[in-house]
Picture 1: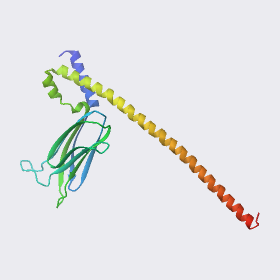
Picture 2: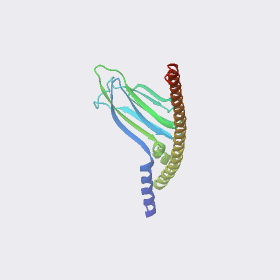
Picture 3: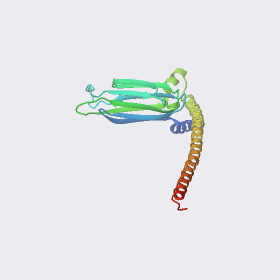
Picture 4: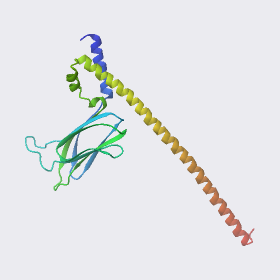
Length: 214
C-alpha cells in the first residue's frame, strides 16, 4: 500500500472514530426493577441492537429467574420491539421519528431477589452497517471498503449537521414563544395588580367618606 493509501486509511479511521455512534453496556438488573437506556436518533437513521443475559455460571443452563422483558419505543411512544421473558434478542429498524428512543429492560419479581447481569449493544448510523457483509457482496478490497466507509461517514456528518440545525431552530422558536408568553403574562400580572390597587384605593376612599373622615 502506498503513502496516499495509508493516509486515506488513517483519515477514515479517525473520522469514523469521531462520528459513529455505538454503545456497548453491561449492567445489573434487580428483579422487579426496570432500567431504560435512551439514544437520540435522527430521522431515517439505521439502528441495530443486541442484548443478552450473562450466565452467572458458565457451562450450566441459565436459571429460570434470569429472564428479562425488553421493549424499545419511539419518541412518540410507538412500540418498535418487544421481547417477553427472553434470554437474548436483537432488533433493527430505520427511524421514522427523530428524537430519543428508549430501550427498557425489566426483570420479573423473584423471591429471594436476584441480580440479572445484562449485556447490551446499540449502534446507529454508519456504525450500524454490516461492513463485512458489504465487502463480501461487493467483492471490494480494503482500500475501496475504507473509502466507502469514509464517504458514508461524510454523508452522515452532513445529515447530522442539518439535523442539529433543525433542532436548534426548533429550540429557538420554542424560546421565542416562551419569551413572548412570559411578556404577555407579566403585562397581565401588572394590569391585575394595578386594578386591585385601584379598587383598594376606591374602597378606602369610600369608607373614609362614609365615616366623614375625609
